[in-house]
Image: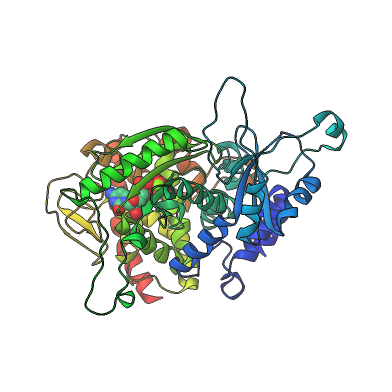
Length: 524
Ligand code: CTP
Ligand code: MG
């Protein structure tokens, strides 16, 4: 009943919701409302990559006759899907059924002559459509329905959250509004594919693969696009091809270390993107970082991109998170809410610095779920009833975590003594000597703890007195995300008791309810 009511109450999102329902492979049997990934990670990556290779990105005039546009393109072969979006102009991503159609289209595409300026010829799949005789066509032009690539405004989000039924419902609403859409995901793979074309000029057979939140199922609309240049196919040695006593090797240049090799490769690819990459602007080569990278904006897609190489482990950790996210849709709902909460309070930032990262936050949520009693993610029904409770308990758990002496270890699902003195220590599950949150300062950690306690308090109060829907007052998650409202609410409800006393009360209430809860949850 719930999805139906939601569709009726929010007409603007009907089509998108229906599409998502269709795509949700798990929805029929589980009744789950959001898109829970069920395919294997490598399967998804390969399918999406192949799809992107059959796709072209076209900058269009602001007004265009969609039917005629598609008819024109289908001269080169049948079109499988297409969508339009806006990003400083109108763009179309058009997926052909066959790869050959792309080549056919490229063959009738010309390199522009720009008057006094000179063009660097490069046959990419990022094209520009012009109207031959715009005056004659004006009457046939129409506005195009665009797919939205950005997250909802705070105003819309608060409206949606406030008209939800329960905190559980709010968590799912937030997930639905912020998760990457089908179109946005396609655009991410397409952007990687376009960059791969540039890199392939130097390294034929290379692959550029997205990783991080674009593919780990925890990405929010607007998140950066992490990509890595995979040269493994080139370096791969196939034993079957050799025979007899002879062994053939390529002549190569040797450098002192893997790191130097990585820096050299990224340096030259960065140069290429800067000089010849259509639509790549603001290219920065950050080669002395622990993980050397090239950072740039891809103008046409609007993505901020970080390109690395020799970074297979990051792809593995994306797969690990993807699997955790696939275990149950509540995991993603919880991660999204915690990420949004952290962003709303400036605990995280898009600028690198001493703050906690989304990746660290996700690890904390997973750890928290592992430490619950029972410790592994249980059945869907069980989690469904707990979803509301989970957010509050997440805040309580980390509001009281012994960060000063313990490290978070999701490899073993338990806390350990910290091996070094960083304020926040989260062991990298694959490179176990590394701390994922080495950058986080004591004051940022303290801010996290304080806000977690404050938010636990708000959710705790929530159970007691919720404002009536007609009062239009933010409550639950909505109250947690609004910095000013969060403060006001907590102050008014606590009748302005000093902070120390509020925290003491909270701790007392957690202690007593913690004892009740552990027996209650074990008993279920
Ligand atoms: N990563 C890592 N160790 C770190 C930081 C990052 O292994 N200390 C890997 C993780 O696989 C992470 C990816 O690099 O998912 C990308 O990092 P980042 O962009 O910081 O995080 P995302 O998970 O992509 O989240 P966001 O939406 O904030 O970009
Ligand atoms: Mg990222």
